[in-house]
Image (cartoon, rainbow over all chains, first blue to last red; front, side):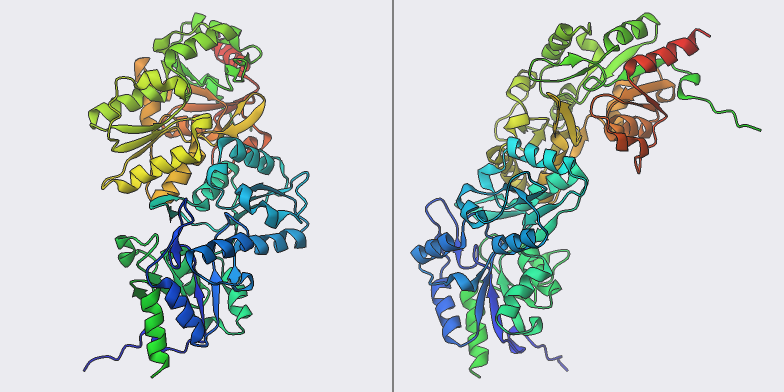
Length: 272
Length: 272
């Protein structure tokens, strides 16, 4: 007798969350390139009637510029469909009357324009790229050490991502550096924080258990989604590495070669 | 009845290890300044007949330049009395046929001149100051990720030190960043590694339990010395902070206001 296994796409799906970098496209100095089949896959997914949101830890740019960038690569996304950490962290800063010292890219600064940054009483880091300089990290460290109730926000805690064909350091390692130097624990805003997934899920008007997350980061996307009650599907694109197939902690609900294959499976089963 | 306590200086002392930065002098952009009483304290300690060695995690410069720098501030040290991590790591690299990618200051490069650095098969980091750039850290990360048996050496794992009157980041936080990004554990060469203390102790021809280490870093100097079987004495100079008096892990064998006071106690008891 053979046990009947239910595959991840055979359980109710009422909405889909997609990571952007490494799933839709690979970023690069020239604006990046679409991953084969992903442009069409996003179109077909949207045409299927399922709500789709884009859950990204992208913090190098504003939501507006990200939409423009993706449009050049061939994706037609709306700003309201994209959930990045910056708007989420700005809301928290406002609610808790916190004035950040920012280590982020210059390009994303406009999204912090409404936030008071004078006399900082917390630190916010994102994927700051070359702004992760010794000088800036020292300044962040000195501010945290000077505070009675130090607060460090990290927009995501990814280890690395693929940029221009190479793996490069994400915000996570620098979060760890400041945590160690200051003996504090950062508050992560972005994946894999549960609240971050839930905001996007709620926006679709569905519940986590009916939602599928497709990502290239086994810990941040797949493990994070699973911890938040979603199904987590690992693509073999972007920063995926063979060793992820036997990850010591995270066991994805499914592996797919790319987003196109994930969408094929979802749509084929829906049409049955 | 009152229990008789034996103070740290009342047990046999056959040799003394001194940290340099924060104990002898405070570093700074202008070459730094001697800590009050320390120049005289080193002289008196040497005159007492006790062997003295200087056990430092200083990796920003060569041993030669360090001697020159200290001489300008007022200390007459010999190169052979100073035990920094660079000669120790060079020895290990040679023994294990490792070719390092270095993240260190430009100033200390001459001490690595004899080491083959082509086609790197390991990474060595020191207190690299502004050479802890995003570019250099990415390169180190990419090398480690490309190796089948990755090796990361960190010369010390201090969190921060005092420079020009401000606390600034030491090598430790960047070691943590690379450890997290690469899922590896660094090999620490320098304090608080046991072997590092023992090399200096052996050079004096004594045993660890008869040796006293005086330092300003409660974890690296004091805790490290204690783990290596020495007595660890905390000075209230350099990077010392009030919270060190109630450190959750390390309980120093003694606290002194400065090196001068430590030497006073040692010499006064010796003369009894």
